[in-house]
Each structure stands twice: as structure tokens, then as C-alpha cells.
Length: 72
Image 1 (cartoon, rainbow, N blue to C red):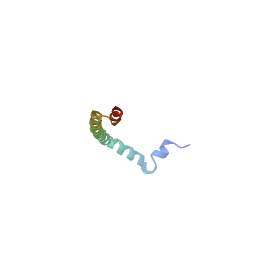
Image 2: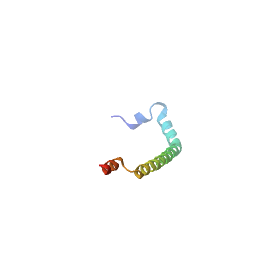
Image 3: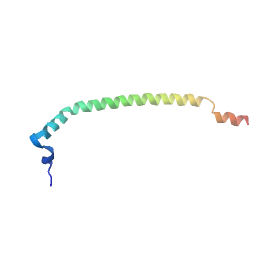
Image 4: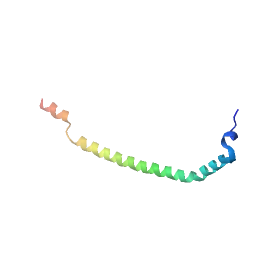
């Protein structure tokens, strides 16, 4: 049976260094993720507004099918 200590600590206790580095980098990584999500939300909002505008423009005209049906 293998144990956590055999896989995590390894030779020269590198596991602790990796863990310490990850914990120290946590706030930076969290800020980068939050910035990415904020930017993505802004992009999605802009896209949504553009699609709504196109939809409104398309619905203001008379549909092609309605013109043909009226003339028959």
C-alpha cells in the first residue's frame, strides 16, 4: 500500500516547496481568474446587445413569405 508521504514529499521534500509556492501564488491566480471572467462577461454583453440590435432590424421589415402570400 502506498502512502501520501511517499508520493507528495519525495526526495529532498520538494512537495512542501510546491505546496508553499501554490499557496503563495493563490491570490494572484484568483485575481487573474476574476479579471478574465469580468472581461468575458463584458464581451458577452456586447455580443448580446449586437444580436438584439440585429434581431430588431430584421423584425422591422416585412417577412418575404408574407409578401408572396399577399400577392397570390
